Length: 108
Length: 119
Image (cartoon, rainbow over all chains, first blue to last red):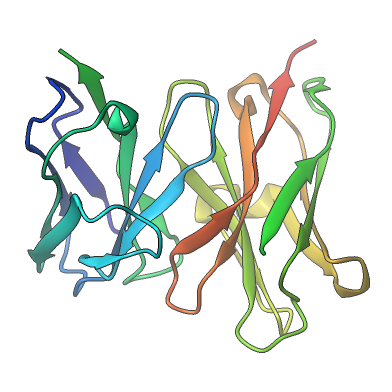
């Protein structure tokens, strides 16, 4: 199974900050990576897929990059509604489809 | 538009069998390429994929839970059903159903249903 490791586990940031979250796979996943946002008590919401493709309706301040085993999610200017937990998910070598442990973005 | 909604018991006793139903609209599991999955999330913890069923009735299960899980579909009712046997308190979680794209990521999710395992 491919293990997905996110860093950091949590971070504190202010509105307007640039935020970067990293996801590392235990083996190469050839850009087969999705990012989700989850707010408390809600289901995850798809933000990006294929490492860098923005899902329809997702603000352009969200972007993704990476290759091989290392991927990043960047929020260019953090907005109040972006405080949430973010998960990465690989779909390269499956089953199983595996998620990272999550990164909680909190208000500083 | 695509919607999914999970239903089932909020409380089950240890050793019992859990049956969850996902009722969806906006797509059909009889259409080529369509897939649905179950994913769970223990309180305060990460997401864990459990099972997948395809339009052609192919099925896939989590290796660690394979012996306890059964996924099925009722195309006429637009439903996917998950059964999990021998429930344990560690199975306490919010259970989500989600539509899976042909690539393998999840583009639509249900709201989730919290299942507590306790005597």
